[in-house]
Length: 258
Image (cartoon, rainbow, N blue to C red; front, top):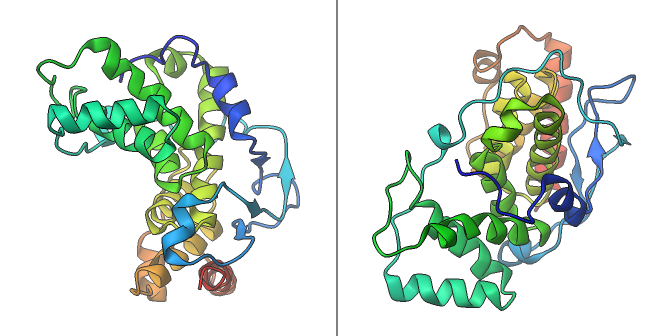
């Protein structure tokens, strides 16, 4: 992945999001995923700015010790096919005029030009490929759920990956963004969180949150998981009582989107 574009520092991008950092894994805070502030019609979910109410919010990022190493960003990113030059020109022009949906579409189009997941696009200058990160930042700041997912999928820059404080800040921002997307009823974000809360990549491992998000994703996709399937996906055992409580948390999260 390329480094962040000039002027697009992580701190500035995080400040633009206006999101607090939840810490459900600290102290006696209940391990509960954020609940959407209100159910939203299917066609409006992506258009709203992020609004969610976690039960426990603090301002400190996750501690570095229990976290797993962040994988290579481009190794987990599957880009779309590059658009026709005329379509790319249209998207970029609209993005530069402040259309945040066009910004996200332009980001995705340009991400297809980034190796190793993509391939260099003939005629597309390197400066425009780099500008995709500014487009992504604008879509994230606008609260588009799929942009929050793409921020995680893009991964930290090589410089951030080598600097522990910067990497911790990226992890906190990526986790907050995915939580916000899940709170806007995005099933892909919930599925990612179910995996990440179990693996410990972004936050200390939590089987309870992993189950809750897996249940919410299954409800939204109309494929509710069985207790056996939930246990099979966990790296560590979970008690019957904890599994039942986590399932109820996931059902409440899913029900708030109906």
